[in-house]
Amino acid sequence: MGQLRIHYFQHVPFEDLGYIETWCRDKGHSLTSTKWFESGNLPELADIDWLIVMGGPMGVYDNDTYKWLDTEKAFIKQCIDTGKIVIGICLGAQLIASALGAKVYPNKEKEIGWFPVQLTETGKRSHWFNDFPQIFTVLHWHGDTFDLPEGGELLVKTDACLNQAFAYQKNVLALQFHFETTAQSLSNMIHHCGHELVKGDFIQTETALVSGADHIPVANSLLQTILDKAVLLTKQ
Image (tube, rainbow, N blue to C red; front, side, top):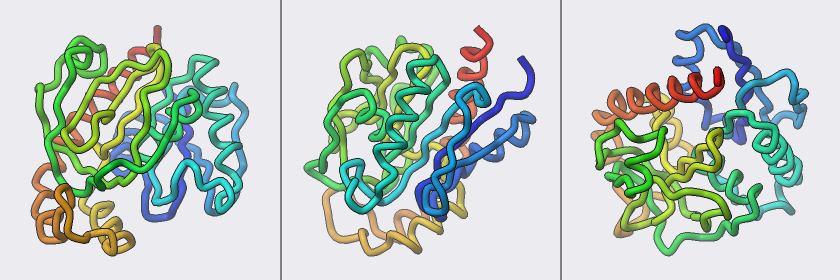
């Protein structure tokens, strides 16, 4: 298998693919998108190999405001059921959990900033994370969390939010945190969501967020490892 056909869901203009786009271009894979803030045009399942579901400030449960959420979750479930690679980030992870029947709800703490995450014992053995350090630092920007869906395997956790990443079957990976962050996407998040930077046990200041950009190269490198593994799974 050569070029992959990768489709992605984008929910707001300022939360784009980040490093994932760089990886796709470098590897020669094709990219198509559904930008829900513009239109809800969906591809034919036969025309895509992967689905990547990005983040956004809305909640999975905000159906009254965002009428397309049920349509989106139904398509995610179709991709999962037909064996596509499905990767979700932040809201995307919550949408995957919801599509698989799990509850999504406000976490007891908002988690915004550069914080370490820890692999679970299952995570250490998983094909996604078996060569990762046990603890690594990534960007968090979320207020919601989710229950683990039936059949899901918890891979990554933090003190503030237990369910940080889970796998479902071999083809699905849900990440509550942001490996894909670039300097530009971090700046965009601060610009559009900076009002959320209020005092909290797990909320950093804007200064700390900006200085934490030193973590971006390592986070992107770890994401590259995950994406390369997903390619191998696609070839099986």
